[in-house]
Length: 446
Image (cartoon, rainbow, N blue to C red):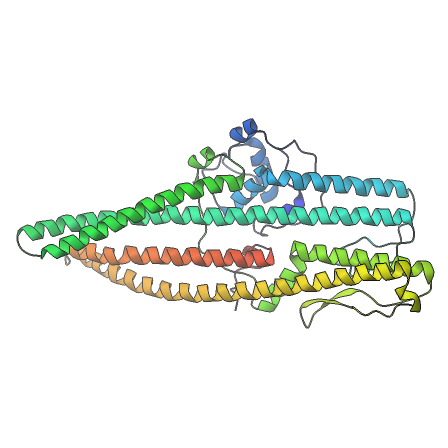
């Protein structure tokens, strides 16, 4: 199976990949049939080559026994069938660029390529150059859609991996809690026979044990459900996941830099739909310049879209000074298209900023909750460790240790729930920027 284009890999963290070299998409085999799907596994030799090329170092052992989020992301980019269409569309668009360039022959291209960062393209001098520019714009759009599809694959994988690993950990803690409650129930039964405890204490313990067992079953069902979803996120059957360990780093934090300004800058200069809207505006502006140039070759006027450093957003000139005949014929139509593209860009930009502000606020609130729970759990753990130390010296009873553990395990369950919520909020923040948190180091949003 062919590798995913280098563009998609540039979405991943710098710690995972080396960079974003400009590489043409390579031919690849058709989408998996049902037979190929069932044959796919995490031991695939082609996957090994893909990982080594992406990680830029050889893998000492293969197949891997443990898979973390970064490596599973690469596996998803390698296997997931939804990316086949994006690859095909991108290759087709690139082919149109080559064909358009070929038709242009040796013509000197004085127009500028519709680079997403080039906010004021030069005038396109003739139809051959127009066709070439249009083909390049379609290729750029296909590239951006491929990036958006790749990000969605990563986002679904993150959501399902997080839920699966959390359910697995919750199941382990509930199993430990059940063992503690069973031992306590037995101890209480013995004390009840000699009249050392009232019957209600045993009844309460049995109720608590029943609730723990029910929670254990629910965690098991959730783990099985999200294991299937995780396999689907990878584009694999479930069987390969039964043969390996999968992990998720719950210590991941939002390393986006010290200010929300940086987050906004990254979102507005990185999100695929914003960049596509910029490309649409640039194309519409270039077409307007062509029409004006046909009737008024020596006319100069300011249009453009530029990055406003102070306001941290794209700015657009909606009222350019055009020739007096601006309301007639092709010029008026081209100007209307340019204004419509500008309005769509500005509306989209406002939506992105609002979404980012909401998700930053949610992340901050979750981060504060997590800090409070961490303090509480740390205090309970210190108490537990003190009892365990006395028990080791023979200065505490087994019952005291069980009661201390009975307090700690529920606290660890609450901590796990808080960690899962924090990672969910972090994932939403990543989606708002469309860049992994690890790209920017380890600074938390302030």
